Image (cartoon, rainbow, N blue to C red; front, side):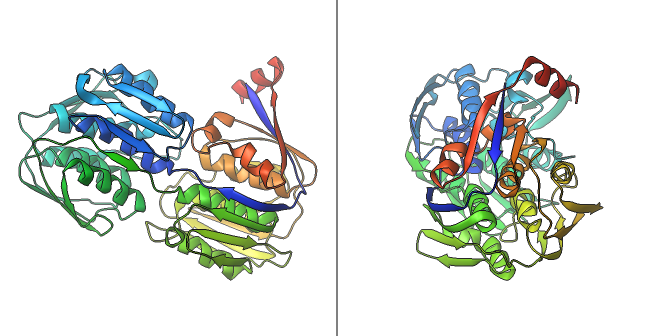
Length: 428
């Protein structure tokens, strides 16, 4: 088990290339089993979440070939085998196997999903959608059982805007008979990416990217080739790192309008941001001012950037308030930032950051994926060396994080933890 050592105080400059979107990849790979012939997905992020999905698809009989940033899934030998809890619990997005297998086989058995612990994230809207399409759903001994004699298109209103539920219902509905209408649908770019690959397979989908999606079910879907969109959250993380410690950093291979809410907040803080066709240039300074941020569903400020941006707010002078309206338990990084000298108080769903204080390197623990990114950014800013454990969270969603930061001039490296340190980590 490794820990990440981050030596602070090094200015960042140069270019960083953004990988394919994690939140697209974890939905597109399950979607591939809906086809009747091989599907190739390019611009794949090389992260551990992809490896987990590769294992899940292999477990149910798919022929999966992973070659660099490309994955080819041949679904012709797939069978509706139960998916075991052990592998499923490694990845919350494994719940997309529910919609894909229900659509393909009219049945599925899958353990309850895992992933980052961000507080209650029920899948009731997913189940509501499946039941509306004609599925019977039961929860027995920690697994979800779904079966349907036939899936029939329906009008489905989501009580809360949910990316996961929107995608899962889409995966099942493309194989249902008749028309499905999803109202109050999520509008994230990843929704459009999933609709694009399904359309390439032959599905008829209209309205992806709006709050009403219309789907005409098809009996057969064909294989296709698809390229994943750039990862807006990875891009945003590097923009925040550059705003924290960058002299001049160019973030390449992005779609700038996916990042408009972050760009606006960085400019409000006093960061110099230059937007190009497929790149953004970020120049920081020592005169940043605090701002208030509220996370919202797309196109609002992404909840996945709430934690990384908190580290930047610790540098900005004045008081900032950041409110997370999406997840109520996404402040576990705050205690770790306090260990480094940050002055942050939590009240309900909001964190009040008294910025401008100097951070000091400390031993800290990543509790989830984006908390890990926040601690890395704080380590870049702090005096001395910061030791970060819980790296498996970071590896779930950031491809070659150390290499990319080293390429920008950061000083960080991995060290193997001692047996004593591992024992302390397990007991903490």
